[in-house]
Length: 124
Image (cartoon, rainbow, N blue to C red; front, top):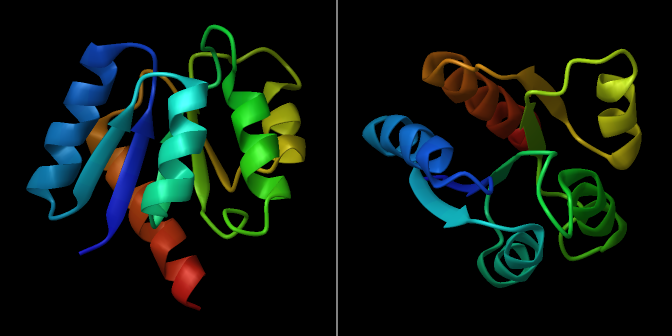
């Protein structure tokens, strides 16, 4: 079973996605902050990370940059799920190292498909 780490400062958002992913067969871990995400990524080495960009203190862009700069975590696919839709946001997230970009509201089925797609890419 593949592991997915959900990173979002809104607990309700994490709970919705955790329910959908776990019902699909994924093992899900949650992080409520950027700092916690980095610590858990090093400890758990998830197969895929789902990351919100807008978080206090350490935002998703910086989390992505730090994880992709570290040889121990750079191979973890990062799917950004964000409410940011302004021009240039997607490109900024891609420059930070994200592997996929989804906008909120994001239906659980769309997220599950993105997780599966990134797992296939990792294996290929």
